[in-house]
Amino acid sequence: MFWSKPHSLALAPDSPFRVEDPQYEGFKRALFKLMLFYSKQSKSIRGANVIYRRVVHQVDRPAIYDVFSLEKTFKTTFSLLVIHMWLCLRRLKQEGKDGVELGQYLYEIYNHDVELRVSKAGVNLLLIKWMKDLEKIFYGNIVAYDAAMLPEAKQDELQNVIWRNVFSDDGTSTPSDAALLPVQAMSRYVRRESNCLSFTDKEAMFSGNFMFTSLGSTTAGTV
Image (cartoon, rainbow, N blue to C red; front, side, top):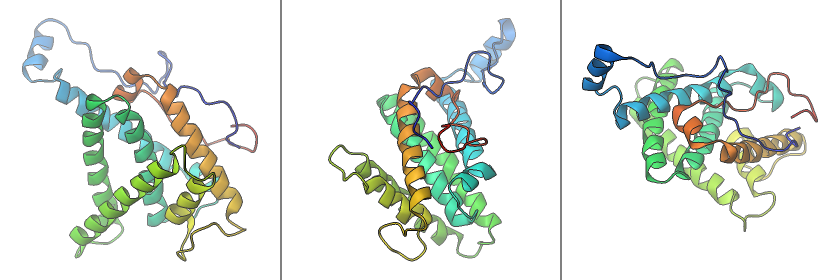
């Protein structure tokens, strides 16, 4: 699976999943303009919220755990959030300063969501310490994924990073025989999504009008 040719993930103009800014006219538009609804910052924050909803949509659905033979735990969900955040931040960075700024808004939304997830998991007394530890893990993972995508990286570097960050519970550096197939599948998925996002235009990225590849009906050889 995940052998097919990459393509843009932008939603079609008539897609029911698109999110568009309301187009007000006259007095109402003037009022919203005064309220800075159409300011660059407001548009960026709205776009970042939509982007994060795309991330959560992909990560919180059962399909991704089924496809990659993962048990749904806080660790696996957090690891998948980090991967999809990295994919988005990597793509936004390609758009220069504006993309980096949008990425910062996206990270702030992600960080707030992770804090809520940690609290929901029952961690309250040491919440600040948990968040600091998770922040270190986030940035450590980002650096590792970036390095694994460099042209000079070893062929199996990405799958080994994914194994350590997502699958491994014992600290081993390479996948076990039993886990090799799902780890390889996730490595192909991540590379393909990265390539698909590269084909996705700036407008779709900045507005959040894209969706990750659906895994709901994935079977070997079809994606």
